[in-house]
Image (cartoon, rainbow, N blue to C red; front, side):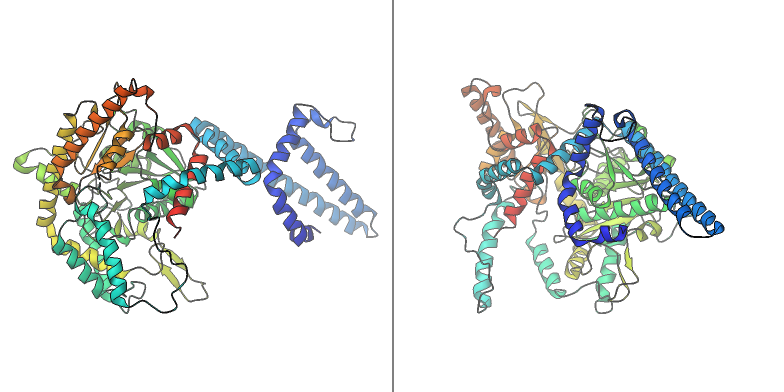
Length: 640
């Protein structure tokens, strides 16, 4: 009977339709029972005066009594009656024991969440749940969201740079276009779009400025155009390139010979790893490996990661994918250093913690977390420590050497496998490694941790299947380009490039310090490749987002930040040649904003528009509605 009711198609459809309302109906019933004290039973006992647990137990006792009476009334021998009664009693004891264990586990979990979850986590959970339910089930909420999306669509299309007069293809052409005509059209578009970054007026994005290097990357890509490392037997050189890129990256980060935590002897093979499609996948893979190695293998069912508020959004992606709780520590309260506070990290470690996430440097402010102190904490508690060096992996090792010339002490602290508690790192070859987009490397202290990231399926109908990362097929040409970039540039080439970037970063930082109303957001650290700035705390006539918008009108593509509000410039070789232009335009823009504030009667009276309005809206609303607007942006970018 139970199987019939659970599998009946009509009932399955009915349950699916009613499921969104189960929780709401239960809450209404509970409030009526407890607050209004409505008695829903016909029994002598008032149901509003006993607990739900007692009601369930009474129901089980009643069901057990019915089954026992049926057993006694059936025409069976005394022995059969006794055996059947004993079996029924035993089965109900098992059911009640399971309920008791589940209840204790649920109470334990609720108590754990009540103690450890922050107020922000609780409020986000509640508001997001209410919003998701309302969005799906309340018509007026759906209508409001659709209306708001239509309103913001035009602004978003401008931000995406879509030509309103563009030709749109939604069907295959009946006859293919001639190759020369096709190339001419695509080269025209590319030439137009490349002008902004070629002029050095873009933060990050394109890191190389060398035409010779660009041609080399194109020729290497062409040579391995159809290669796929999934088919290792056909392209063995691609696998060799990948292994060598990993080994060179590991040696760059003191991973040439690492010490295993389980064995004090040095491993001659050193750190291991693999290549991925970018920094996000590297971080996702590292978190997946830690969730398996430090979580699943230890019987942790609710794993947690501790990171700072400056952690890359890929951590949020991984936590969403693998159902991991992200414990966020505010990096803005530690003497304005924007770094993780080791004391706070240790305070938040629990039995469910599998990993600490740190940055070298962080994406927003470009500061390096205290890796050495965090390494000691990770060792003390036997948990993982991932260092995100996607930005700094090909800069900090060379910067450290440059700043140590003449026996001077380098201001750049230990940040890599030199710290024994570091279990994994991510380093982007497609940023300051000058490889084509998109390649990155994820590194592990030992092979056992790397094995925890693999995907293996022995029972797949298509045969035995295993891949080191999420994709099956991967573009071998990109792996070849990463290898060619590293080998063609070499240590001396990276050193000279880093020297130029350090000098440009220093000039930009000093220039910003001289502009009234602005301040650097680096704490006491020296900017290496990211220069971050905002308005001074007591400055009321400047709006950093307005500055960003006006700089955009002047042709600069900068990165706007929030919490705290700021702008950062990721200094590339292209930016190095336009430092004075940037500082001149920035100073001029600041004066323009001051004049706008004066004309409005003060900065507080200025009407928020552009980025200021968007970030103001984002800061005043729960995450649910803001995420809907962001999804609308994705929809538009994927619309022809």
